[in-house]
Length: 287
Image (cartoon, rainbow, N blue to C red; front, side, top):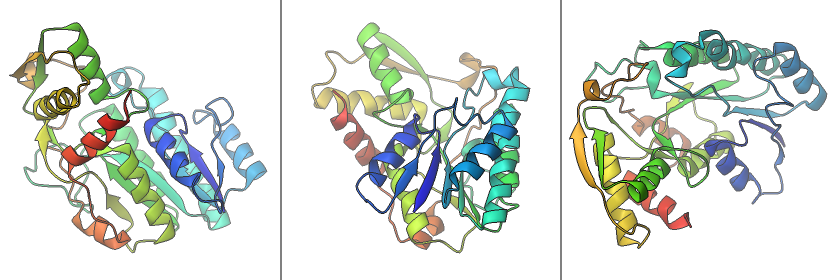
């Protein structure tokens, strides 16, 4: 089975390939951004027709949430327009397409976990571009959308590794405490996606994050607590909770973006891991 994984150098792409390497029935294509330029529709079509993948996992994205507010055209091209080319191929070749999306398609005002069929209301350019990508993908009857949130991994750049770096540099840190969501270890997200391919769900839109809810402040506190207990921190900085308006950003974040993943996990035959347990697994893999 020939699988195209876009965004192979990213956190999710890394784990998707790591799992695939354990099964010789998968022939993985993971082109570089130069080989598969999501901002170039002609390059997308040329690559697809030359390589003829049997399944596409679109794990690539423009993820610079704040820069997207000014780089609107680029964000829309990569996260939205590029998916049209993937969907066209999916329709023509009857090829399964997994489109990875985000909690940023919601405005955070609901106050309870977002079900997959909840109306999307993005707050900014990044969320809007990802929502356009969802709509483009779902033109294909062979497509699934998998939304996730707060992704981190031992590979690549992410919140957990940033907190560990800052902890080594500073005695005090302030972290936003009024944005609530669910962390997602990229290894678990990758496992969910492979399970979806092997055991297709009746759901068209699925949600996948680790179990449990926290704020960014809570998340940082757990990072320091667990890393310290493992001997991976020389000292733990004093952590201060702050409001979002005390840490202004170009893009507005949803204040509550917990995803309701219960039916999605059931539909693929998996159970979610608690986020602190997943964080422990990730920290154990760090040097």
